[in-house]
Each structure stands twice: as structure tokens, then as C-alpha cells.
Length: 592
Ligand SMILES: [Zn+2]
Image 1 (cartoon, rainbow, N blue to C red):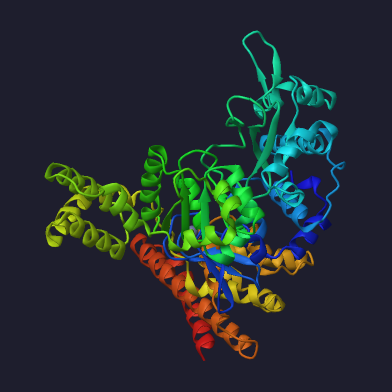
Image 2 (cartoon, helix red, strand yellow):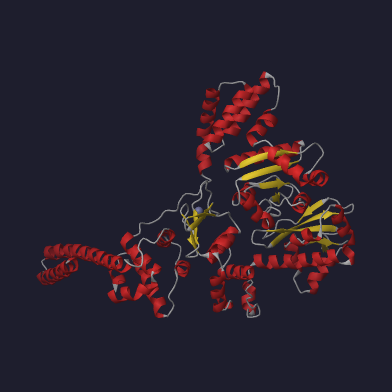
């Protein structure tokens, strides 16, 4: 697979890729000293331990131990192969990788995911062309009426699927794309009679883009009398409902900058807000917020403002999302618009400032919960139910401060003793805790790595110009750890091939192991030795490694000697005694 991207292109991608920029597309990073930190996308965590070192172009998570360079970051995050990750980066960096160099065999290797992305890309282009053509007039008029201008259309790649049953189907067949693939991508439907036709007809089209910028699905809104009003792509190998948020790809930068995300329900709500300049918005695509979606937002901010329809369905959707926000330790405000308004209507009628005011003044979720969920004047019986409900709600709040705040406010509201409420919550928590912990992925089991040998490897990785020194000393032969010896030998080999590797390359070539983890960990902290003292430290370390080897060797010779004596093998005894003497002499010389 690796073969079909020319080596110099891979090099170019590696040189031009900036790991901080790349990782920032997926999580918010904050600078701390020389490194950047953020919440790890590979395991659930509350405090950032995911660390990026811009100087060395590597990342390492102190929580779960994932680490590597920009290419392996994308491989792990997107679960893609090396060439896919390289090509993805190349596209971002504007580096063209010749596609024609692929042989037919290699083309077949193209992953399914990539095939669907291309089909969706082709469909999106088709939809866009339709929108700007004569056929698209009705859709353009509609957008104009909704106050959505050309720049928004371009930013979100909006399109149009005109009336007609086979436009897209015929287009794909004229391009030689198998119908089966187009159907799997959800663009064509086949009915029971075996007839195939376009899924989207007479609709405004909203491409749904994942964080990599790949179109994974489409949303369609009828602009005539089409039923249903909204129609989405079905799930496909690239699209899982509840794993994507509409607009996040375009708005993540603003969300990160403002450190707040406004959550709306529909495409048009998002586009209206974007049009008036409120750009830290995502849309849930009409379903209740899922944990995966909350985790996606959480990569960029922990503050959300959720706007919802004030009907019963909306209310219970909010209650469900509150639970998620509390579990994920996010701060949520619940924005309630005046009866009959959705964000789109509201912002068009009153403008951006009015909406942003409503958002700023909206209650934090604890207030919302108490007012709307527990409610006003209750009967005693209703209060008992409310206590029960709120205990099962509060027990899931993982943050102690938040939990106590809820306990205080709820007990005040219901007029019950705070201490009593706390006891009840704690009792309920004991039962649920085992459960809650399962979500956290614990640090991987790591085998112990020899610190001295490891630090020698670390030194020559940081100072590749010292590799000849360790080659001369043949020090890797004295390593007691096989794994580390292999790493050392690989370094020498690459030197012999004339490639002095940088740490990012070395990391990428290592298989996932505790050695790799330890090396990454070391690489993340300040160099423990500067250039002036490196030779001395290197000498010391080499000596330590040798001494350790002698000590171990002596011990094992001692063992052999005892065995030989027991067996009465005098010849062997003699040889071993001599060997032991020689080792001792060498050891003494070393220590001198
Ligand atoms: Zn992690």
C-alpha cells in the first residue's frame, strides 16, 4: 500500500505538516510552556493529558499512552491506513499526489470509506451545479427568502436536487460508477420491483461533513410540498447517525475561539445564525443529542448553550442532554426562545444582538432543571416523586461541586433537609459507581522498561550526531532489554543507510509498545541534558549500562560455577573461574 505514494511526496507531507495545526482541527489545544495540551480524543478524560510537542512534531497522551506523529495521529483518529492518512494530509497542505501512478491492483485496495467519500463528493458537485443552473432558480429564490446569501451557500456547499427520478442515478452510471455503490451511499433507492431512483428529488441539499472535511451524508429540505419536509441520507459505511454534528467542520475554529458552542436543531437555524455573524454553532440534525456528539463538541469547548423548541419533545430532549453534559462535566445553558420562535425566525426578526443577549441571559442548567423539570407548586405526592427523580438525576453528576450545587438547590426548592438529600444521593451513587467507571479507559498495562538503557536511546534520538559514538562503543550489545536493543540497532541501521532520523520518524517506525510510550513521554519533557554536557552524560550512561551488564554476567557465571561444581566438572569450573576473574578485572577498570 505504502508503495503507491512516491517517497518524496511522503517526505514533503511530513516536512510541511504542522502537528499543532492538524491536531487543532480535532481538539482545542492550549499552549503550556513548550508544549500544547488538550483533552485526549482517544480516551475519555476530564483534565487534559494529551500533549503535543511542536518542536519535535510528536504527540503523546499521558492518560492512555497513545502517541506518534501527525500521520499516525490521523491514522488512529480516523482508523485509516498509512497512505490514506498521508493523502488526507497532502490534500490539506495542497500537495498533489499523482493518482495515476496507482496500478489497477492498488486501486482495488482503496478502502470502502474512501470510495463513499468520492461518490459523495461527486454527488455534492452535481448538486452544487444544479443550484447555480437554470433548474436551481426555485431553490435560489427560497434561499434568498430565508436570507441565506451566496457566501453561505459556498461555505457550506449547498446544492439542489431538481424534480426527477433518475438524474443522479443516470449521472453516476454515465461515469461508470456501479449502482450498488451509489445505493450503499444512500443516494439511490431500489424498490421492491427492482426499480432504482434518486433519493433526493426537489430538495435543497445540505452536505454533512465530518471533521476531516469528507462529505459523509446529505440532508435534503423540500422546498415545495415534498413530504417529509426533511430527509437525510440513511446510515452508510461512512455515516452513523449521532456521530456527526452539522456545521462543526466549518464552525469548530470559532467554537474554540469563543470557547462556547451554540447547539441548534436544524440546518437552517445554523445557517441563519452564521449569516448574521454568530458562527460558533452546531446543529444536531434533528435527533436528540448523543454522547458521541457531546464528546465531539467537548474537544473544542466545555461551554454550550442549547437552544431548543419549547414543546414537550424539546423539553425531554433537553433533559436527556443535560444528563450527558453533567456526566461529561460540561457547562450548559438552556436557551428558551419566546413561544413560537425558532432560532431562524428569531434572529431574522430581532437580529443577532438580541439573540446573543437571550443566550447570555439564559439560565445555567441547574436553574433550568429546577424550574422546568421539578416545576412550581407541587402537591406533597408530586414532591415525593420529584425527590426520587432528582436523586436518580443527581447521582450521575460526576463533579462533586456540581453535585453539591444541585443537592443544595433541589433541597431548597422541595423544602427538604440538605443533609438527608445528600445521604440519599450518596447511597444511590454507590450502586451506580461501578457502572460509571467502566466508561473511563484506564491506562494500558505497561511492562517495565529499563530506565538507563531507555535514556541512552533517548539521548541519541535527541542528538543523532552522537550515534557514531554509541556505534564505536558497541553499547547496544550490552543492553539487557531485547526491545531496546532492537530500537538501538534500528537507529544504527538507519544511520548506515544515510538517514539520520528525527524523533518523529523514529516514533512512527516503532511498533506500539511500552518502549515507544516511554520514549514519547521522555520526548515531551524538557531535554534533561543540554549540548554542553551531553558527552559527559552519554559517557556516564554508557558506563552504567556496561557495569550493569557485568554485574548480571558475573551473577550468571556464579550460578553456572555452582552447577559445574555440583556435577564435578573440574574443566568447566576452571574455565568459569578464569572468565569470572577476567570480568572482574574489566569491571574494576571500568569503575576506575
Ligand atoms: Zn489519551
